[in-house]
Length: 167
Image (cartoon, rainbow, N blue to C red; front, side):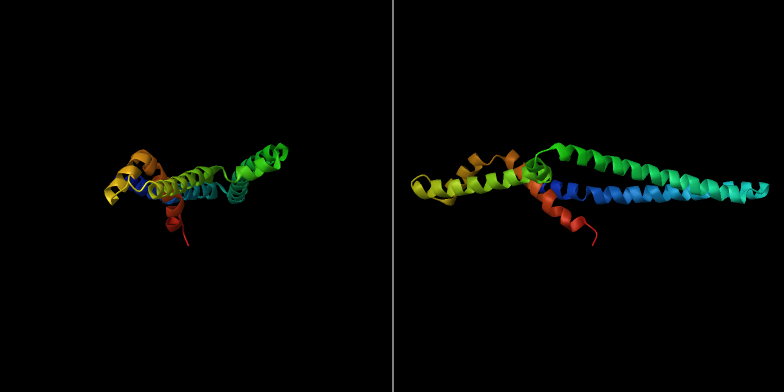
């Protein structure tokens, strides 16, 4: 039961960025609407005073500052990553690309090895497992519900995220 819940949790967590993106988009639109309202009020006030050209220059300058700040932050992050990986061994650079899925690899390999081990053990000791209930009890001893919950959550996150992405 815990495995099922964690698998569903993994699916839901994989969709969390899309859900958060929806709320962020809604918040951004509300923010933009408020900024547009404030800008319109400011332009009306400036038109009354005859400062339309100054308002346009100010708007362009503000937009440029925001764009430059975003570009500088992104550039700094990329430069930092490049600087760190520049001094690293080639295998470290390759390993960096597999950091996130490494846990998934380990759990799937573990699951495969344990299943093969159960099969070999059951085949070489025919007296221990006489019916399917014995096999289920043996598998229950080897696989804890916590381990299966983690595996279900990981697999649900990685493979469930494909359905949430925009096409």
